[in-house]
Image 1: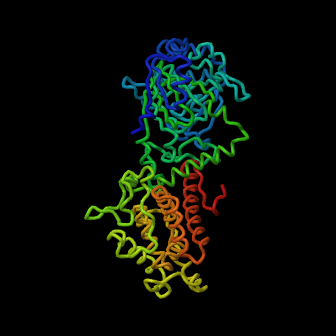
Image 2 (image 1 turned 30 degrees about the vertical axis):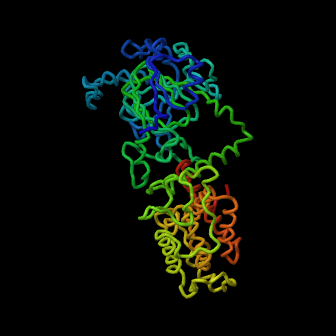
Image 3 (image 1 turned 180 degrees about the horizontal axis):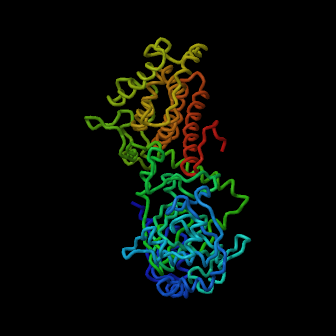
Length: 543
């Protein structure tokens, strides 16, 4: 289901230029304008049912156009490896369209090959020599009627006389106007355009499936450096989920519209779309640059790139944390409650609304006794200590209950601890991160205070050697939540006790920050792959 804000709207009345520019275009959401071009001369003159093919043949039959020949017909892929463009007299294409219409059975299906060759004349023979057998292989795609961006000959410029600029585009600086025409049923591969697009159906019918840019990760865009970087790598009619597993979710973001002759569809830049065309469909499209792209200053490109990548990374990191897990409840509802309905003693005065000056809980105790902890907090402490002792040589970590931080560990011990360093990136794979995730931030604060006071070497091993990238991300998030719930003086006291348990406080801070950066680095690689189609298997990126 598409988000309500991304729902495609249908307008029965053509909007004014001001309405389109102020209320439709800025939303970057597709819109259908019913009957928008029925007043065009082309709407009546090009209609194949009213002699439109003869009209076009007479007007531009001598023009040489580029016809797309597809090796994967009736699907036309944007990658030049799957098609080629062949120069062809427009009159020859028109003749072939006429013969295809003659070959259509009463039910709309194409007659058998022998029947077709009996009906076929010299046009079929000549075209088949160029394109192979089958009219479905031919498609006139993006044949220019007007073009301001490329210095090339505009083959069909005379047809502009038959087209009226929609009134709501009057203030736009058009990049191009193009003709699209197919003799048989065809489908364009899923892709997006770098311009705003108004697709106008002059004759026939088109069915368009659209996806917002935010759904691009499920469509697997081709590599950014490739020839067809604006196309999806997924064959959506039969996706291989073993290669493209995220494609399974693609249809939940899609919307489908049907355009009949006279209708127009506004397709904003960046929206992926797949277009199915009926037999003998003729369309014209208008492309123009959006205000967003036009307003981007070239000397700011590097900054824009970093800002956008940072937003995508933050979004993906959040998705990684919440994947397959329930989102945490609001702070006001997550205070750990036990069977007796009472929160932990050490933060029992925390205001349940967690707001205002009185929402700051009691300050951390100078000496926290284990028997003061509630059962679930004590259980979390026990599990964390057990995990550390299970992962690291228990002989190296044996310590009395009242031990305090002593001298630095020897070199052999450091090397041994380094050998068990974990590198989990998924929350469900990491027991330490999972425990931290489930604890209320003030309950976690008590766990760390108890470890700092009673098991400093275990806390040191936990942070320096067992804190994974996802664990570091979860931990820093809990620290942020703690800061919201405590006064500045109490925050400073907690961090003094916490970091005071380490022989090298900077090493602890560095371990947490390195883990957090490692998690962000993986999210960055995923963003490059999912949104830009780039696989990154080398050393840590420096963006």
